[in-house]
Image (cartoon, rainbow, N blue to C red; front, side, top):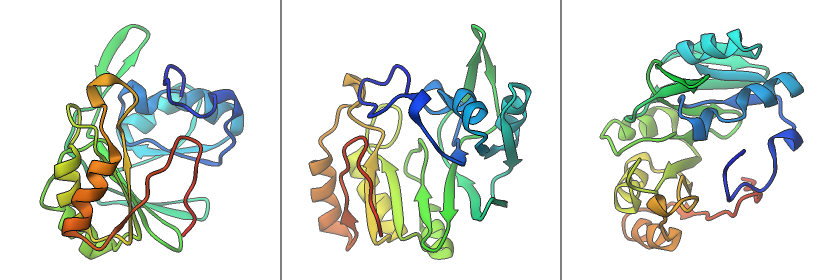
Length: 202
């Protein structure tokens, strides 16, 4: 949230019990340690990021792609994402592990794709985990854009799809309505466009 011009709140006001980290880039790892240490939240991430965060004093659960961990009462499964992943710490950059997507499976599975491009195994993610909600990046440049995300929606077949990772900086400026129009041509999923701070209940 710190440094994000579209953030609806600040890190010192966040209250949570689980933090899911898909990869090590600063716009995702961000305020994780500060929030985890203040709230006592458990951070779920791939093993190498978990080990890194644990050294900073965060409570972590580290596992790997294909694996499922029970964090409090929530099962979380790591699935592939195609992207890069690194951590910048104390002015030096350290490469770590693989980026991931996450299936957050309470009563109604949510697929958070993380930062990723389109890949055909998204169909398997849909077949196996049957997510009710899919959260997909549409920003282009660093991730897939609206056209590829619409194809991803068709492969995954969620009931609801939420565009993310767009509009915070000029290089990833996208109109989510464009994504919505493309989805309507290819899928039965309902596109849910949220502003920062809004929520969806399903």
